[in-house]
Image 1: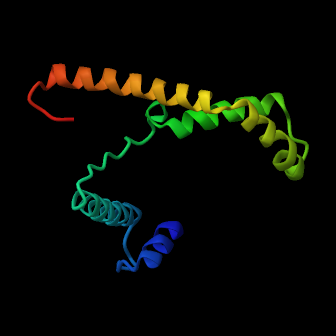
Image 2: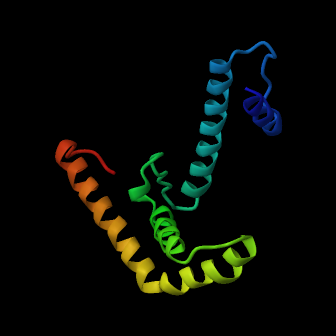
Length: 129
């Protein structure tokens, strides 16, 4: 609960000190939605469309897939301490994770996106995704 009130304080959002946990969560969610709306408006005024990734769908987020691969590689090249992690393990992982690896990751996500779009269009032929 303290984390929520700290966040609301940081954002300058007024709330009642006797608000329960659910009410605070609702206020945080509403405030976040207002921020998303501001971002969308800003980009749409410049001719862009903002598409937010659904939460917890790592298969649609290339960076999540990339980090998963890097973490897998890091398990092969273990780090003994923070310095070893930064100077040996991660540089080796990034040597292995090449531009080609990144391109494959993006193509993989694009394939999933296209399948989801096709499925969405079949269910809702008049909608625009």
